[in-house]
Length: 212
Image 1 (tube, rainbow, N blue to C red):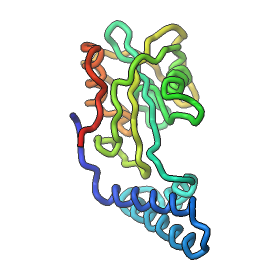
Image 2: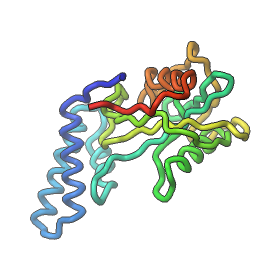
Image 3: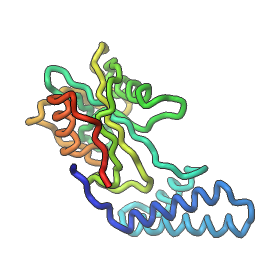
């Protein structure tokens, strides 16, 4: 398993942010609110100090989340045609990834991934099987993300549609394992793509997940 240990400072900052977010969700005393707000500020300062991002951007991002802190869920559609894998090119960085994004409230993972694949590629699919559930922080994604994220890789059968660009993507194509384009490693790593090919070659493989 292609697992890595996330830098400790990122882990500390995420845990501080989670404590602050959950505390602010339930705090009623003004003193508690002040203390949890200060903890969130410290988390933002840590993340800004360890990255090139402006602290105001990070602070604004952290303040948008509310309620009990839980991992976010990112769904990725794994679609094969004639042994080649579907990838889309992100307008944000000009690099390629599996189609996908955040799971929406009110949708199942299957519904979310089918929607994301269609929105980003124009192709219609049907979700078949969860191939992997990975903790983003245990894989070499860059840059680091200020929240805890679970990534779900879902095998989808191609059932129709026409390849097209979207507001988020400006390229769509199927690629051989040996000729992959430059990947958007913030979203997917080369090892993860190769692992999806392994699942394609061996459909009886169990779902992958990060071991203890």
